Image (cartoon, rainbow, N blue to C red; front, side, top):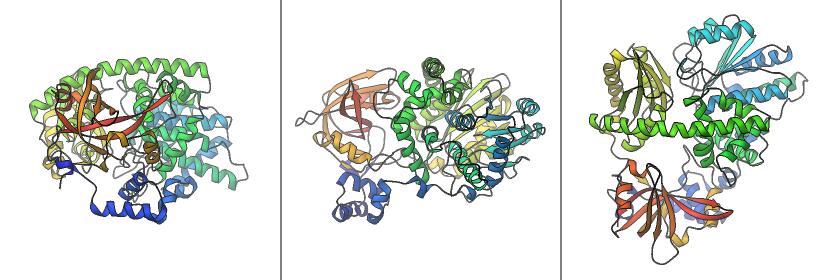
Length: 580
């Protein structure tokens, strides 16, 4: 049965309320342990039993962090890394150019710096070198270093790692592994094919952190002390976990929660400078990590100098941090302008092919490789289908894809690459990259669509919108949101509760930027509630709500605290609406 009677919303979705079992569980929890109803609703939806509620609300990292040795090759990797430290060997860190890669590299660079040892940072250029290790760079690093640590990359890099035979190589990664592993000292990856997948939720920075935990244990066993403070590094782990859209479950939840506390202390110059240039004026949250800090760290790898993000996160010099943060902020503005142009063209092209296909895709001449992933995300959000966007240049195209829940895009792209239709490709379930020859573009995309159709991608309709309950504007208060946040942090795999607001009138509506909408909503009884709808004009929401004609609507979204000028107010992050 639909919630508030909404069978088809403005975005084509049916609204579904909490099921009876969840509602009963929340009510029983409230009676048994006396927690606020809003908190009990979140816990019940997450399947947390009453006797575990207090532990869930106060997660302890030492209880949730898995033994690093559960991952294959972990002891070997940590031992070789520690050997390099003890012998003062020359170490190079080869990192991916995104937030996870930059954070992973910074974890190692900062740890080594505190241990009194320098290291070389190498981040490949997205356009000139592409993703992951390449033969030339690895061979050059091997000539001058004893140990190369590849972070957030390397699991599929058989030939480049073979080219680095003059040095030892360790891979710390989380991307899907192939049938064979590269010939190196160790490949630590919870998504290797011979792993059980239980720890597959970690991003690369989480894997790096676990290796440093194992290094600490080996140091202690050798009587070498405990080394640098690992807890102080959790701000970097939190940033990577949220920005890489890793699910906030199990240990990840505790890592992010503790990492936000570390970040709030403002001890890392790079993150302080980035927060200031992003105009953050409240305590850091997962929203800030995912939508303010993450995109700016990414901007260097997308359209600027690839190593800017890692350098910013690793520096101890406030002046250097301010300069790099300012440059990343400029690049992020440029990135948005480029993205808007590519998005408009890609939407038009994909719509012409049809939004109801198993795969929504677009390819364009000269589309910047640094924004195709973001545009793929926009296509996915607009259509509810897996999406791939490719920038063509010369005889090849480089693309990026984003998937929807239940459809493994990375494995399908990897298979098309194995069949020879893609030059290369891989990733994980929800995000992947590829390189394709121009003359094989159409057959390659047809084959990819065929594989996704077998997973059910062609049968997907607009996903039901699940709501946790109904609220009136007067009940949406700052204290309520603070209660709800006790059950956080919220993000991928752990969504914040979503509420329906019935029968409201649009008191004010204004278009913001290219595609966003700012609203003020009223029920005629209270002061109402302000709302923001990002990407409203990418769907039917923007045009209809802007030209509302006095009509009344049901609204759905998530609550957040908006801080402005030192004052706090409630804001609705609007996701959907329906004619009342």
